[in-house]
Length: 283
Image (cartoon, rainbow, N blue to C red; front, side, top):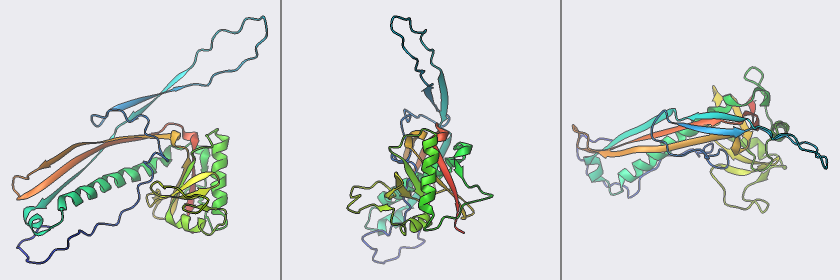
């Protein structure tokens, strides 16, 4: 955006903002943030403890009960292994010629860029889903149609039922082309109708087969053809993040204001069987 010469033009009072995708995977309705804690730097760890099942036994009157069961304690480690940054500058000449607050707009763009980068990473966690919870594969992908997509969502729900995943709070994240197919099915309850008139989270579009349906352009795909459509419950995976070290500075060899920011985060599937994935092909 640097200008070699002062250009006496009338600048618009508002900046033209970029078109943005909706961040879906990192929000509370899709993924939990229970272990975010205090992240200080890359490599920090969050230790997650899980208690094993408790046994139930018959009770006989006037008879001693068995010795107390010793519960097992499994530990999972969430590593903050992602460190991403932005670093940009705005030339003093550019800033002087523009009435809008260019830096404020640039900061918003930077925040979006970091969030979108993390959302794409979170979508890739489908690789940690239990092997038996996939419908289709890269070698033999399913091809949903307007008549069959709803059925595939039902099948994802069956996999979750068989894994004892909670029925409440279930979600499914679709790419836009699948959402288009779902709109052609009368069984889909669209958001904003009398049946579902409420404030929506990012990307939420309605209900199908007992799941809240989200739409995202960040659904993981292979070559723009094989899409990994994930369904599950937020308790199945967790995300921890922090934006640290936001610094404004003056580059020593430039007449410009600059800002750099560091985004630290990590994510992990803690209950692989409480997620399910449909490998879907456009054709």
